[in-house]
Image 1 (spheres, helix red, strand yellow):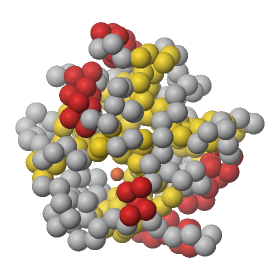
Image 2 (spheres, helix red, strand yellow):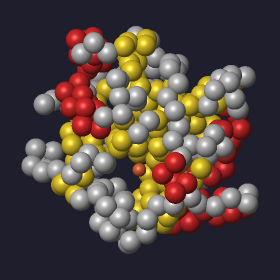
Image 3 (cartoon, helix red, strand yellow):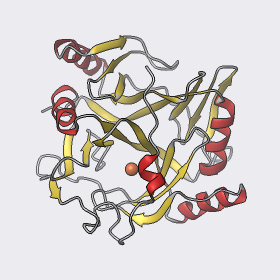
Image 4 (tube, protein in one colour):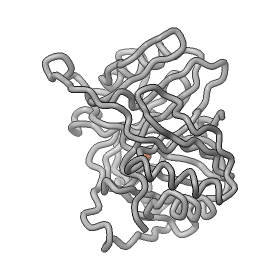
Length: 293
Ligand SMILES: [Fe+2]
């Protein structure tokens, strides 16, 4: 199937404190705040106008996970498919400025997506912005009420390709056109588990841990190495209670047509989540942020 999604888009988070949320992400990861207003703050780790948008709301939650479409025609195609699937179209306009076109829809399994044309880029002068520990929003990790049903939907509707999965779809990892092992992953449950940034270097994961310690906080889990994706990982909780992953070295699928998805056993001795053998703490599994349309 032809790819409709080119790369990760943005994450839109509802929070009572957009400024504080953006400032905290900047302090921990070095992202720049590209826009701030009374009711919103946007951050970016690169030339894009926004990787994460915080919109003021009495609720805390995820308004949408953005996926950058190949082009305008791909947005139209996703809209047409979402309608024919009988999905609830929440809007046919983008949630954010600097985006030309979008369609936002709810899946019957919980996650809400916004498929959008590329967000604007602006030239970056390294003399003014070179402190970022991270360089791009890499992926999100979702929970769905029926992971196999979700699998069928996202491969059919969005043209996502399965990179790896566990036997019972306890976890599954999906890629788009850019060849990274996953743009999103999914497991059973409700909400968004984490959003992840790609670090410039392994040592940047130490920088994040140091920044947390400077504020009397600490990593939630890590450093370790994931099974599927092979990336080194660390996790912490943001001020909204959402998990942030800082990752390094995510696998690239070098030939999209030849890749055969792995099928892994998912149990406490399988080391699927950490090849080095650690298991996530209980608090890690419980930290789910709800979708709020
Ligand atoms: Fe992840």
